[in-house]
Image (cartoon, rainbow, N blue to C red):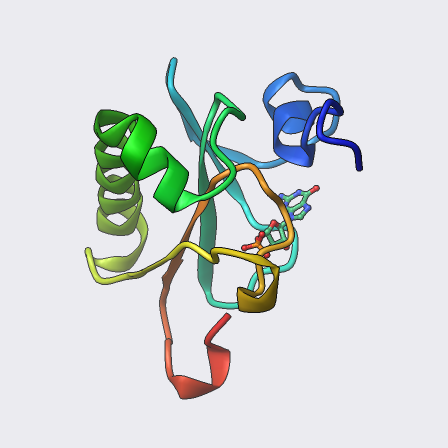
Length: 116
Ligand code: 5GP
């Protein structure tokens, strides 16, 4: 994909491709991961695709990062009794495949075997 092409998440935000939307406001969307790695596996995605990863987001808009974390907290409260793992894969060698920053909210029956 060229850097000028919208990310898969931008296409989901624009409703150009379908997704199961769990929560949405003016700044973020939360969707079910298409290949869940845990009983609860939700992605919280800033609507802007200006930031490739969490380090860029933290430097560029810490308030938006805090909003991503608060959204994750709320989803985990609603779906998993408030206990969850928050993962930001950062870089290809670390498993990042979509370079539009997103948080994985993982909850449920977590153990060593389902690290992502
Ligand atoms: P990453 O590997 O970049 O940390 O995470 C990308 C995540 O996006 C993966 O867990 C992958 O399953 C998910 N994903 C990729 N394409 C789609 C899609 O079209 N729809 C949804 N709902 N999730 C997707």
